[in-house]
Structures are given as structure tokens and as C-alpha cells.
Length: 204
Image (cartoon, rainbow, N blue to C red):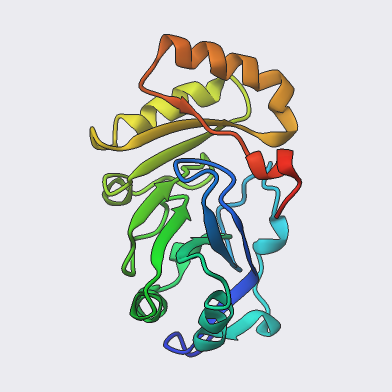
């Protein structure tokens, strides 16, 4: 889909909530979930974010004005896969309004935009770019089965020494993999656990 990338951005949903997972768990944040993804995770819990239609195009200024209605100044850009788009125009506008900007990406596309925190959540379905994972402030690996620990370590070796490392149970397998993650972290203490606390709290 072609659109004016200096004015519009494809948005599946946007809302004010608490960050539920990873390093910033518990902080108030305005979430912007961009539409469009070609990574195709089997267990994705927002498959409706994969496609883009014309109705999802929002004026950047309108979206920023919505975020400004709330006192929090943390923006979390997620998807879909947000780095499919050039985020320079959008993040420049956000910075002008005083927002801190976090992004969650699979790392499969080059980084763009003025970003304060990069969370890379790599997926087996589309390889992470080394130049992206080396910029990661946070590595969050989803554990769906035992082989994901190997995948997590493969990606950890690509990060810097200052990158925060998280293992997170895939929600539908939570009861099965959570004990495995706990045991793994006790043996590999460089890692921390990330839980989808927003699902426990029943908030968006």
C-alpha cells in the first residue's frame, strides 16, 4: 500500500495502559501497534495486525494529539513489525512533543527513527539482522518449547554486554514452559524472566 509516509502511519490500535512485559514492566505507556507484518509467527496473539487496509492510516499529528491527552510520556511502538516503515518522520514529531520512545521489533528490518530503547524479540520465521540486534537494549525471547532456549542463546551471543536479557513464556504454553524457564534462569543467571503481566491483570 502506498501512502504519504511523512504524514500518515498505519495503525491497528493505540491506547494508554501499563507496559506489561520486559524491562519497563509496570510503567505507564501509550501503546501504538502498527499494522503490517510479514514475519508470520504461528503462535502470534495479534494475527489481525499482519495486514494493512486504508482505514488504518492515521494522520501522525492526530495520533500524537491522542497520546498527549494522557500524563505519561512513554511511547511504545510495536506491531506487527514496526520497522517495516521509515519511522523517522513519526519519531521526530514525537520527540518534539517530549516523548520517550521505546520500540519492540523482531529485528528483521533496519532500525529507523529516534529511539530511546530498542527491544528485539527475534523470531525463527525471519532472521534477525546483526546490525539491529547489536543495537538492542533489551533481548526478549519467547519460549514456546525447549528448543527456544537454544535459539535464545544463539541470539544472546549477538548482543552487547549491556543488553538486558529476558525469557518470556508464550501465553498459551505458560503452565508448561514457566517451570522450565525458572529452572533455566537459575542455571543461567544472565537471563531474567518476563511475564505478560497485563494478561494477569486483564488490561490491554
